[in-house]
Image 1 (cartoon, rainbow, N blue to C red):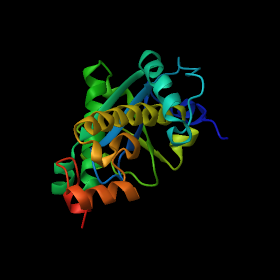
Image 2: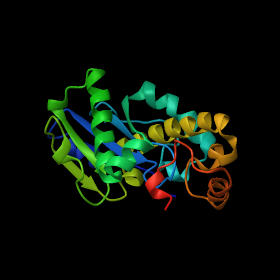
Image 3: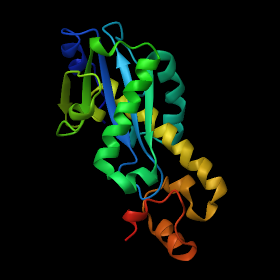
Length: 207
């Protein structure tokens, strides 16, 4: 099992006051929003909640126990873009817009964006062109696995989006969103064929 470290953040924090780890959840789902998490760290963050790692390797119960600790440990933010907008604008644009909303959430909590450096999970910079406040960006593949700030952002966003889909499942239980979280499982696709699509479905993704 690989656990994240602060190695990358420590290098970045030699040049700035804050590093913002960013990651998304729900990109490949066929229902529900895309959600971006953002977590701010400083040089004073030398420890982190026990058990934090790549959210995909954690059980739901473990993620849910860590998420409240993340709110106490660091400044965290979220950005959401719903299915209608994804249909209209496409997932790439909506992913970037959700990241901007997450960063604006941080700003509303008092984070000075002019003193920040973004650490972005992935293989290319999909964020710089839409940032209202220019910030330096480091892109790192597997940052959700290797970097504490990004693992924290991913875990926080995953718990929030999962809770959203669980609440939605109470209204439309036949889609089993409480278990599939909007992803295209066999049972989920069968439910769409039987009941039709919901307003939470990304309509353009169903054809």
